[in-house]
Image (cartoon, rainbow, N blue to C red; front, side):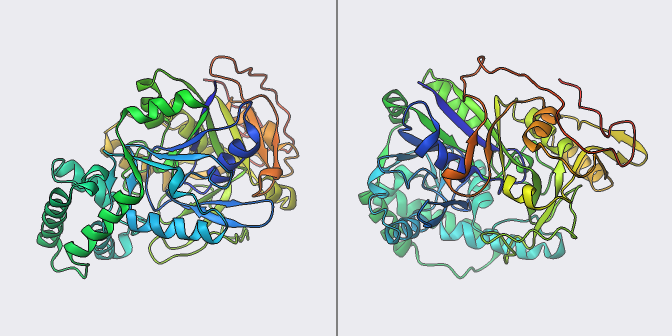
Length: 450
């Protein structure tokens, strides 16, 4: 059977949720059995719109949950927020999906995000003032940071069924963070523990072998959160997440089960970024309002810009390659002829087509790369691109298999089979229109293949 991994090749918000929804409801050769979440936590907001107009921003439940029978498994790489999960289940119930919790399993080793993590996260971000990193303010980074520093004391899903262990870990966590940051306005340990005990009584908390059994029962989609350009090791430090956003976590889970998957990288035909950090092709003159994205208290403005082949090539390389591309928001490209594409940068007079991959863990090198990107200027291919799938396929030297012209599953077009790894044809051809505006060094010339 064929499994799939869906990861965002940008800064997030590329449309992972709609792709997962389509795979679960229409896309696969065999019906999808389970969505596996493999990074991030309650900060995710994967918007899905059904054919009858219902909308939900999937955070912890898999984005295939609107399809009856599709299960969600929160792997050990997920950061689980039980209170937010209950609220999400309630919203799904109001939309007619009343069995979401019955279709959910949680790995007992998954970290728990608590109100104490959230309060600490917000306190640290406020203290940065104008130097904020763009955190969602939901405690994700704080959960990961605390677990790295105190692995034995970090609350995990399995602890929610052990009242004494749970109460002890929550108290130690609260006191440790208060010692670092001062008094925080947070709920009492007893109240938090009661909520988590109720969570453990309602949700199936399972051992590590459960996922292997699920994968033998039917095809699965591994759904990522955020984007590769925000990856904890490969992103543009310090404007990154405390999460591995590449295919790596999903590939590790599949390897443990003796399975493989098709790696599907998702990108828009233009770029977006929520919060501060480098954004070479940002264009404030582009007016591309979105009903489900906008300014928020913690991340600030929702920024938009033109397609950036340099950054997206870097994301593909950082992710270890992609088998296929899902290209989204083509309905916007059809309406907005001023959308352009950047094939290279000008950095202090030098033409840059590819960014250095760097070594995982070398955050000094990533911060230096961030400094270079803040000096970069885009060199555009031009306007009037009539064949966006062909153009992106050429730019990334990776086949575009799925084209999305709207938020619903019915708005998707399958351009080539979703083949297994090693069976994907690569007929990359130059099909895009437009003339170069500047820099004969790269504009208008198809990128060389790796």
